[in-house]
Length: 146
Image 1 (cartoon, one colour):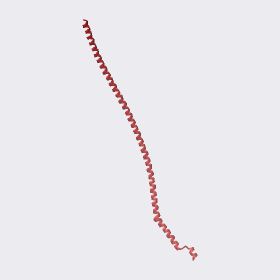
Image 2 (cartoon, one colour):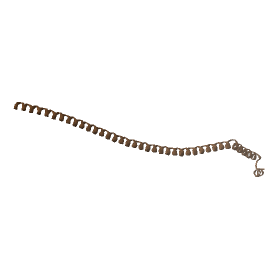
Image 3 (cartoon, one colour):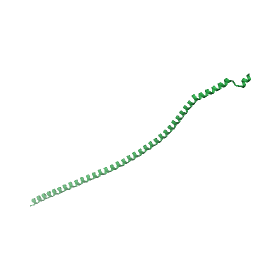
Image 4 (spheres, helix red, strand yellow):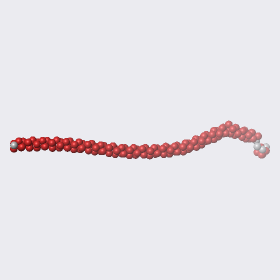
């Protein structure tokens, strides 16, 4: 019987093997597949988030480049406006100085003309006075001589 038992497996061993397979199938169905699906879902979410982060990083880089370009363009425009305003101010300054010099020259010319007129008038008065004094002297000399 020992040989026969050794040649034919024990019925209990077969039952235990079947129960073990049922256990493995149940564990697989109840624990492994749900956890595997959760892990796969998490992996897909992580991958999706990584792709979205990469896309956001690229978009941020583009926006930063655009903002830098806009700032540089604004800087150039403001420098151009400042330069234009500076040139306009220089032109106005030159114009105002030229006008002031012209007005000052006209004022000097008027003052010189007024001084000349006053000098001519005084000269004429002085000549008239000299003539009057000369007449008086002549009349006195003629009176004394007569």
